[in-house]
Structure formats: C-alpha cells, structure tokens
Length: 303
Image (cartoon, rainbow, N blue to C red; front, side):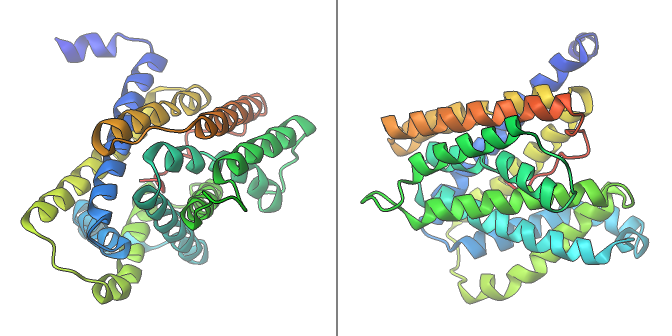
C-alpha cells in the first residue's frame, strides 16, 4: 500500500524524499567518522570503509570480470581515483577535527570549484553572475576559516582541499559517463582507493575495540544506503531542485553536533555558512538555466 502511494507522488517529491533520507544518512556517517576518528587514524577508517565498499560491489565485479574493469579512459579513471582520495581524506579529516556544522558547510564550497574546473577543463563559458557567486562564496569560506586568526585550523583548509577534490571528481565524471558504465566507474573507485589505502592504513593500524568494529560495520552500511538514496533521489527528481535541498545536511550536522558532541556553531560560522549556501544555490540556479547540471553528476566523494 505504501509503495503504491509513493509511486503516485510527483517525481520531484519522490526525489526530495529520498534526498532527505540520504542527507540524514550522510550526516550520520559523519557522526560515526568523528567518533571513530578520536581513536583511529583517518587512513585506517577509510581503508576499512573501502573494504566494505569492495564487498558491496563484488557481485557486479565478479559477474562481469574482467569486462567490468575495461574502460575507454583508464587514464581518467586513475586521475579520478586520486581526486576521490583527496576528497575523502580532506573531508574525513575536517569532520574528525572540526565541529560537524563547520566541516559540512566548508565542504559545500565544492559548488564553486565545479564552476572553476568547468572553465579550466571543460572549456565552458561562465558569465559574470556565476563568477560573482564564486567570489562571494569563497568570502563565506574565508569567514569560516578565519586565516591569520587565533581560531584558524589546518583542518579547515583540509576541508577546502577535500571540496576541491570532490569538484574535480564531478567534472571527470561528466567525461567518463559518456563512455563508461556506472558499475565500471564504481568498481574502479572501490578497488583503486582500497589498494592505495592499504599501506597507510596498515602502517597506522590500531586494533579496534568491539564497539569500534560495530561502528565500522555500521559506517559501511550507512555509507551504502546514503549513496543508494542519493542515486534514487536523482533518478526521480530534477538535479537543480535537489542540489538546493541538499543543504539540509547543514541542519542535520548542527543538530547532531549539538546532541552528540555538545557543540553549537558560532555567529561567524552561521554567517559564513549562510553566505556559502546562498551563493551555491545561486550557482545551481545559473547552471540550471544553462542546462549544465544533469543527473550524471551524482557521485559520492563526500561520503
């Protein structure tokens, strides 16, 4: 009955429902990463997470091996793996060492990097309005980072670098999805990042406690459902509408930060985050008008 009623809803409403669930799952993932990061090294967390992702994609890999790993652009697949690694290491490090709301808001700077990389790599033409949104958005990022001030943290910079890595991945995906199958792209990432993380993950290995193993297992499941929810959201809803709604993650992050870690954003964080969100939504609006944003850009380098 519920399934029948759900399918009767407008497509955008169905997409929005899945996005709300995905945003909640991504925020919960950040909470788990932050808890684990107080005891385990970020590379170990990422290694175990990737092992879980490899297990998830194993059926697709084995059912079509070695064809699933045949790519028309293996060079771009490798570059994508590197940028995905940058995105996850930077994003995870920011989540572990910064308040959740701060790390979440900073990571939304990827919208501005997408515009910059679209010009540099895809040779897109960007008008004065979108460049103005990029400039204003980075002012918001600087307000949150406060470079030169006593509250400046290198982990805020790590979050910005992670956002840039995620944006680069999205741009590369726009090229790869023209020729490669989604399962090939996902398989390359899961295997590639996992292999690269073997050395640092083992070097910094600290045997997890029972509770940490449970959290690591939950992390894998939550990450999987977050990504699936995101995919289904973009299957049903319009990308421009969903990209604007995705900022609900900031509300979830603020709530989780307060309830779990007893931290609440400062006035400066609220102002900076508001500027970032407003500028990013404007950027999405301009991209929608230019027919740049599309369902192909639905990847997961922030989780």
